[in-house]
Length: 346
Image 1 (cartoon, helix red, strand yellow):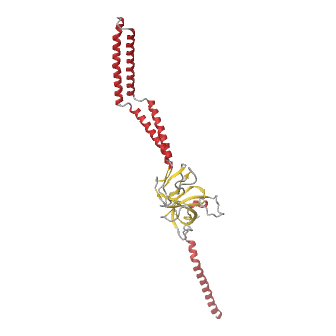
Image 2 (cartoon, rainbow, N blue to C red; image 1 turned 135 degrees about the vertical axis):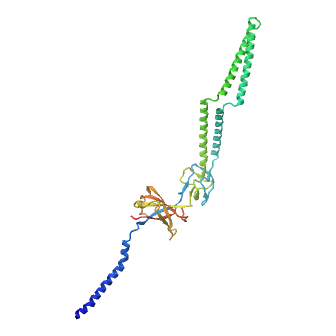
Image 3 (cartoon, one colour; image 1 turned 90 degrees about the vertical axis):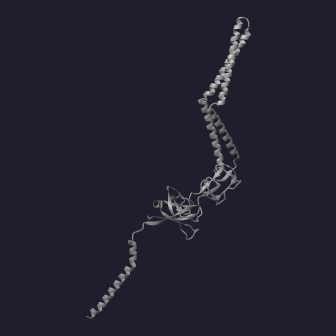
């Protein structure tokens, strides 16, 4: 009995210790077990490097003609509109060539119109009057010849007089025929081949005018977009070389900003249009600028921007993704940023 009484408290103590350990184990492992049992969201963050750009992409303005800049009408930060004149190359020679070509077109148009319209009423009336006068002279010459010819047989007129009368009659007939032909030509109008030649001449003149206009237009440099002057590289009085690497200016639409992200080859299956994204930069510590993916390239290419790390592969293939940022963040064009995209987990 004594031994049994002593064993009961021992059993109770052991039982209490076991239950206490079980409770401690349950309270410690419970949250972990719950987290493991919860369904995974399936979304993780995809990180990439990126470069800030204007919404329209940066437009590099390079003159197409060589010459001296006579006018530069923009400053950095200026707002420009599409088609606005921003600079001009000396173009007096191009202007003169354009004026001469335009005058030649006017001349060719007048010639063609004259052929198509035919003779004026005044010209027809003049030709008809000339023909009538020729007929009258012919009738008079015939009458003189017919009056003199019988006199030869009666020895009342000489052979010379008869020859002169006959010659005068023939001349009058020829003059009447020429006047009649001139009137008929005016009434008939231009021949088909004459019209074709005049039309071809007009087309050639118009082509020369268009060529002169194109050269003149190239001397006037205009903005291709609505936007802002990001940088001006050349000034008035400087000489430009056609299609040289040195641009006149760089323009961009800063109403919206985008980031061109370099998506690594292993991550291209996780990127899609519409995904939310954010960007960060050491220049703006503690700040995130939100946006979304609006375009994904369909072609792999070389990396657009590098970190400067020698260990980074320079020849790695990437896929470009365009992230449009919300609002008007104060990120300057060309700034390197880190891009974070909500993408499906691997």
